[in-house]
Image 1: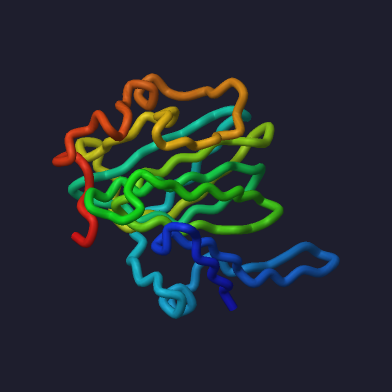
Image 2: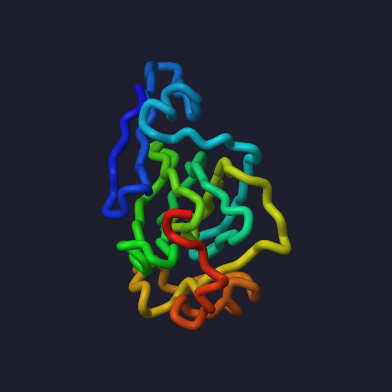
Length: 186
């Protein structure tokens, strides 16, 4: 049975699948539509992504505006600090974030609904990160918030971050036109 833990932002959930271990290794279901629906996740996932990154890499904080993507994230090798930031205009938790360590060892998953900015930092030598998306990626709808925005107060736990030029060009949340941010409740 899937174990759900709510976070300080109620819509963001930590999930622990049931793991069957023995001398051979382990088995677990990483997605089961009915079990996820039973804990309130009824998204239709349409795309799976897989990335590999080295220690210190920060990917994010990304979001989609017209075609918001919910995400179901997990790590199959290594360890990351996964971060979801509520950027929904009008939300009671606007500008707040949830951070959780996901690893191949702890097998935790995080569910992030559409309307949140998402990113992760690699804490291990390398990491393989997988995530399901609730809508298709559309490059023309890609947006982001600067990962080191001081107002967000995210401790990425990385001494020397590696990031893409695109990610470093994003603006702080307070500098983004509210019309370019998702709305709470719609």
